[in-house]
Image 1 (cartoon, helix red, strand yellow):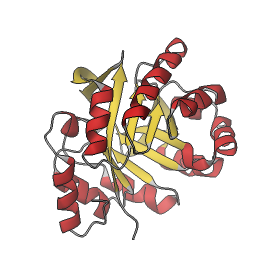
Image 2 (image 1 turned 180 degrees about the vertical axis):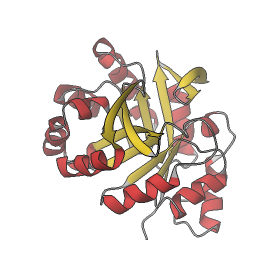
Image 3 (image 1 turned 120 degrees about the vertical axis):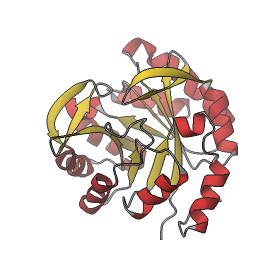
Image 4 (image 1 turned 45 degrees about the vertical axis):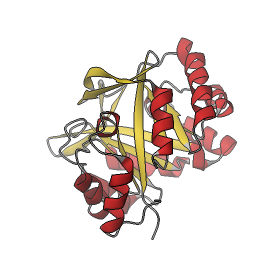
Amino acid sequence: MQTKRIIPCLDIKNGRTVKGINFEGLRDAGDPVDLAELYSENGADELVFLDISATEERRKTLAQLVERIAERINIPFTVGGGISSIEDVELLLNSGADKVSINSAAVKNPELITQISKRFGNQCVVVAIDAKLIEGEWKVHLVGGKQPTEIDLFDWAQEVEKLGAGEILFTSMNNDGTKAGFANEALAKLSSLVNIPIIASGGAGNKAHFLETFQKGKSDAALAASVFHFKEIELPSLKNYLSTNGILVRL
């Protein structure tokens, strides 16, 4: 049985960590470097950093932040937001990131997945998919959830695996920030369709939700933000709870 991973996510805007509900209503959650160090010390398996307002001019700013974080932590971390070229990827990996996350750029230029995978290895390519359940169908959304498409979540997941993605980060827009639990039915279906790890995102509100996504959702990792940022769930206590309930985690 594979070890399940717990991944705090830091959404970065103008150099600060922020958090909203259903992708809206952002509030400040602290300094990303300090939070990263805290999570690393408290047992996080990995970290994800998403520059949610990224533009080309700010890529270098993000690279400087990545360098500062890399100096302070000793666990793998993924960086995403506005990455649209091999050059962007190279800059972030050279700054200390272990993986990159691409979302809108992957839909607009699927070949980018293959290019990154061939150049740096598929283990460093995380394809993030934001999807919304609309009239019984999960539809992919782009540009931080603002731009709907007719692309089916499950078709796209299978496609990105073929193109060379090493991992999928699936965020349910319906569940995001609601603290009502992960979209486990969709996660279980994703897990049955692809052979690469699936990271569950959107909806964590208590420890039981993490247990449920590993048991029912068949997720390989669970990502959350506000419950960690605002100390509603402490990482050591969450891991002990999961371990007690038969989930293999790194303690």
